[in-house]
Image (tube, rainbow, N blue to C red; front, side, top):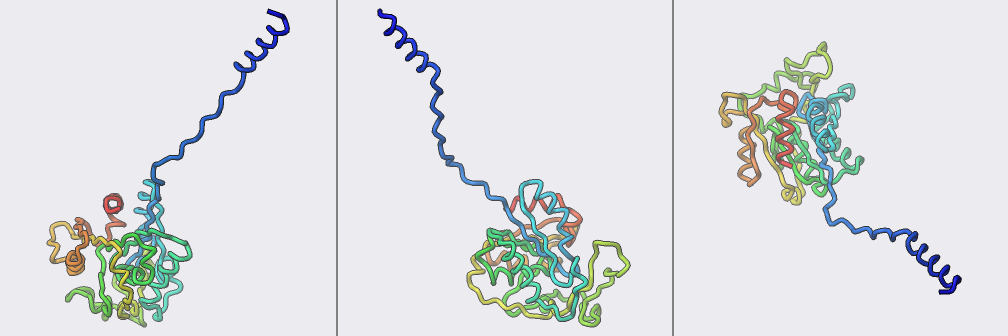
Length: 260
């Protein structure tokens, strides 16, 4: 073989060996995208978003995004308290919070009086809500108010009211923070106005908390548990006092995860 031909063959072989391998073509994943669960909690009367802080911490450690706004005149906004604050004010608070945060697929939880509020929110923006959760809460229909829904023999709201604010015995100005604060009476006396039939299509769950040793039917919120069951909603009974998110945060977080 001639030297020039041999040299050409050797050079060609070395180029073939040293050429970098072609990069693999990426394959598109067929796995569904993981969507972070979003919870917006709505506190009850006299309270604030602080009541859900323990549960929020637990759920966020498990991958949730939790928002816990306080409504006008309550929680950290107690300095804005006014007898003019009504139910519509609180509904606007939560509607605007969801819109301004641009939240979608929201699990919206209402505790106690907060059930009035989330019912109104669902009537306004049902397209933003993936599920409603009523936690030992009022479940009103059009025209009802918290005052008309009270169980006979429950809190004597009229005797606790001064200058348009409901101030029960446990609300004390010298108590350390966080704490319950006076609540606007108008939010209890205003009837809810519901107009949107689309709200009825939002999935919902009702949780009734029952003190240990007591019967569910003796609970102040049992009528709303029964109303939810009559609608065909999933209904759950939790052995706890009326504020499980504060006193039993781990159990509450687990229950919310099971619902999701």
